Image (cartoon, rainbow, N blue to C red; front, side, top):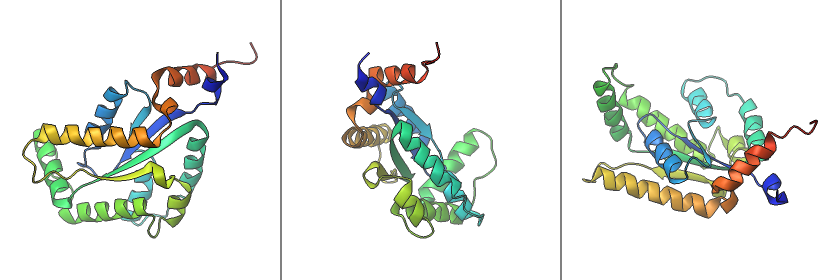
Amino acid sequence: MSHHYYTAKRGLIIIDGPDGAGKTTLATGLREHYNHFPVVLDRFLVCDDVYDEMYNRPHRYGSVYEWASLYSGFEVAVIICVADPLELYERVRLRDEEKDRAAPETLDAYEKQVRIYRDWAEGRKPFELHAKICVLPHRLMLFNTSRAHEQDLAATKARHLADLVSWIDSRLPASATDRETNRRVNDAANINPLR
């Protein structure tokens, strides 16, 4: 087995953002596009920081160490999805009506969520430390999924996915999105040296 596979890192794409921002749709599309390599997570770590701020809870700076440990084994890219707060509110309201759930949070709550996610992505107070340590700037994208004025929803989703794939391919090393490399790195990680 080539030494390259032992030193290569697996790819990890984290997609975060408010409810209704299109995270699950984009995560599903990326998983299908890359044939499940790299790993694509729908919400991870970022939301802890955002919701701590939103609900005035003390910030858990332990997440900084969790980010650092991710970089030891993964090539990480982070996508923060945002959209117009009114559009988010309407998306969630319609989705919840279809599933017979209670009404979503207030429009004010969506406005606050979008603002806090933007602050996190742009490294504004109180997230300066997170911005410096958690995410490499060239591996972070603030992605607007608003589509209020577009008629063809399927075409819009396809364009959003194509834009993300292009951005990921330009930011992560090719080995991080290559299925064979990821499989061999996973196999190497499971080798028991005592056998």
